[in-house]
Length: 236
Image 1 (cartoon, rainbow, N blue to C red):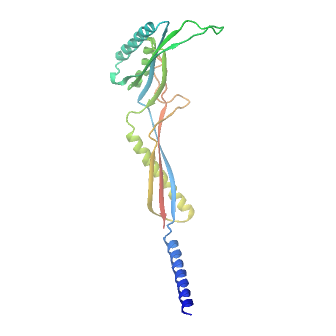
Image 2 (cartoon, one colour):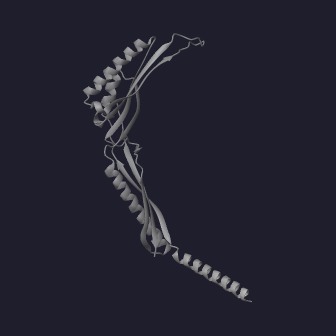
Image 3 (tube, rainbow, N blue to C red):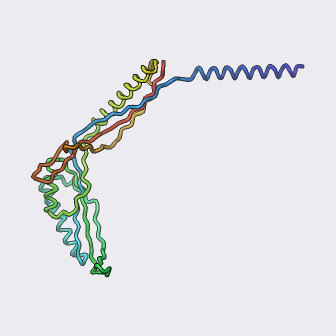
């Protein structure tokens, strides 16, 4: 009889503790609203990057190298004459390789040697970009690749993009709370991500900087810097 009573008491205690635990979990459950926001800042580029290269080909490697060196020296002189800082001119590739040519019947012709020299040029004055491209081509450059635009100081724009993203998220949270008939509580969590990169934006009219039409026309358009914010609010 005593054993039965002890078992019954144990079962009742387990039930009471379980009920308390369930009630406590429900009471501690915090209701939240989570939202995201985006901030965008448009900038006019003030710097450009250009890959300028020379490619020469000859039946012997010495001639190919000599011709390429002359072209590269001519381009270096042109860039210096335009006032570019030597620190903004960097050789990033120099290749020498044989190339076998074939006639229309598939028979091998004389072996040729190719020399390629590529420099990475940073142009800080966009007003000189078109003039620079014309000058280096006339100076012997026969490969122009990958013109890209950027801004020298993005810190202020990135800060503004983050601020706009947070404001956008706050507005959404307020809108959702009003629609749901609840009141926002304290901000519980925040996470902000900046793009870290710029995206070129071009308009149909060629907006942004355009080089003087007397030289090579280059339109830089606009650059877009973005940031995303994720906020979580408690519900009162």
